[in-house]
Length: 110
Picture 1 (cartoon, rainbow, N blue to C red):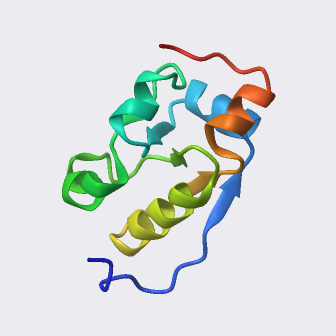
Picture 2: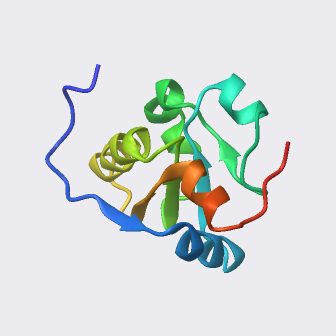
């Protein structure tokens, strides 16, 4: 499924950096599965599970700054590489995922 990847460097952001960027207009994409999303997510995040990300990526703004978040940071790195290989230039994986987001004391919606 992921054979189309080019090697792309994955940029990272801290939860605080992603939060500030989102408030400035960046897109925050949560790539976790439905049950994880329902357990709590960052306000204003766009829910797009990793399994649908490549198929749905043409619907994302091509010129937007994108931060990708998951549970702990692994899937978001995969997702960030996928988006970079699809032509998105400003993409970062949120270090520590939603767990790091919570540890930073940032807001959570349910």
